[in-house]
Length: 384
Image (cartoon, rainbow, N blue to C red; front, side):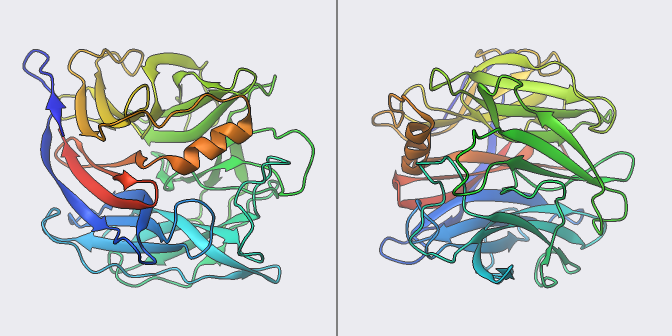
């Protein structure tokens, strides 16, 4: 189901759409989620996603990658480029990845590794609010994603707690790279969880990462700015939006945003975008305005896109584009704790819109959606 409300002569629109990969009921890949797109300089579309028997937990999960050379009309049979690795003697699984197109056919991947010593252990410990050990690996492809180097463990010091990635590595105007991740806490740690969003920087192509910037961390430890979604704008600014949770009240706030004008070293004050939901990264449109995809769960879950004409300060509902609507009832529940929030997330059957800007304006948008929690497909749409 789709709907486009026109605003003057520059209405957001779906130029094309389709399915990247459909999970098949009763198979090891019936649950497909957490997709990340990438568009190479030569126009190949890449999409990496997590496939598993069920959405919750880690058992059986794999990171798969596919690509299209005909703008989504057909997709290569998925490959599993990043094999499970062992860290500190612990076996692990690859939970997801983000891809960054560099020069020519070179692509850089950041891959999220999760401890799988106990296959039955939940990813999130409801008693302590800790995560299974989660590390980042790096891998490169010289042939636009068809083959990959053996993933190597990234040194995220001084951060030794679980560090799940939040998206692909950024290319900054000064030539540096920025790796994005969140701070969680060890599985059995009973100290309070102090969440933070972090960017870590490399000036040698990803060999070392000596400098970092804390993008968000509430001193009061009340507001959690989850799922940072940064974009490097044409003028060099970094604009990031956040899925914002008030843990004291156990409610989601509107999407918040902040920006950096010095390549991520310092950040502006946060501002409220006025949009309720879970965002994907903002992307530029051909006319110079910005667009933001998000999941609206105020009712039945829907993937929507809004436009801003004032540099991301406001996002009027007028002209909002509905990319996907699940229909039926809401998947949001009353919450009284962080545990309730995580339990709710595990039941979502629509979510995580992510974008890759296109050379001629607009973006390739991918997201997961399906008839039930454990039966979902990866969808794509070109938004202009």
